[in-house]
Image (tube, rainbow, N blue to C red; front, side, top):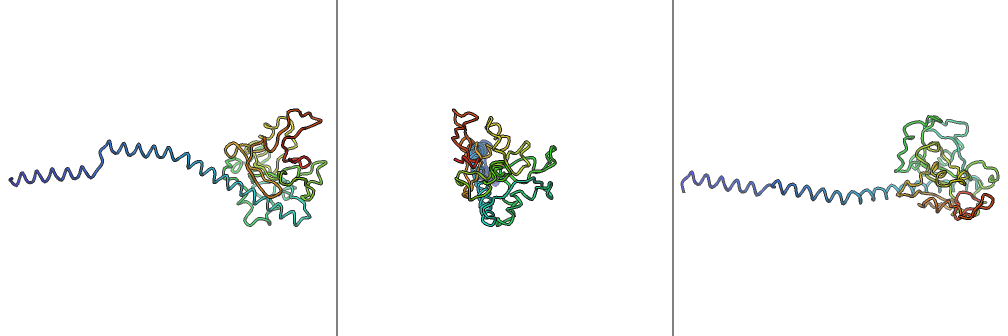
Amino acid sequence: MTITDRYRFASVCAGLRFRRAGFTLIELLVAISIIAVLIAILLPALGKARDSGEAAVCLSNQRQTTTAVLAYAVEHQDALPGAGNLSSGPPSGPNSQASWFFSLEDYVDTDISDIARCPEDQSERWETQDHANGLKRVVSYASNFYLAGVLTGFENYRSLRLLRNPSKTNFMSELAESGSYATSDHIHAELWLTNPPQRAAEQVELDQHNGISHWSYLDGHAAPAPLDEVYRIGPDSTFGNIDWIANRFNPKVAR
């Protein structure tokens, strides 16, 4: 074999080694397709894991807040914290400091703002003021006005000691992200009697967590549930005689 032939043979071998070390276009496309399929399979699972984690944080926020409510009651002769007007800056109204948000500041182990927002809460009112009242959103959660407000006939129920069924009596719900309640700190379940699904949806974010919402109670626990598990009127009810299947807001009939 001449020197020229040897050179050509060495060049061919080197080329073969180079080609064996790389990928062909078809191999590369197959690899990309496999990666795309794996991503498509994994993304929903990762999304569900993220949603589950955020829901767990939300429940933890509500449990911590309700524990603070109970601690507050111990130091205030069983009285429950009230409701008020909130803003993202200094208090905006004469009753701002009456809000549970301010009342509970000394009863949590962290800054209360750290547990005031659900991770899934995407309300635009965190950043922009409500043109109707000039307020921004401060909390994702709302107290029950039956217990935190001043309703005629319910004055005594602002005392934890007088509640007939604390484990079925709601104190915290998840505020609607839009509408007139988006910048509130409480809800008015006493207004839900006519058309409960619509009235409740105006005040509460009912499907925040995969079609359900979170609610916390005055025995200290918080739990996920659809609306009809926490507020439901029996089919044979009349305005003068309500057959409650569930009402976890009105302390007189809490069940």
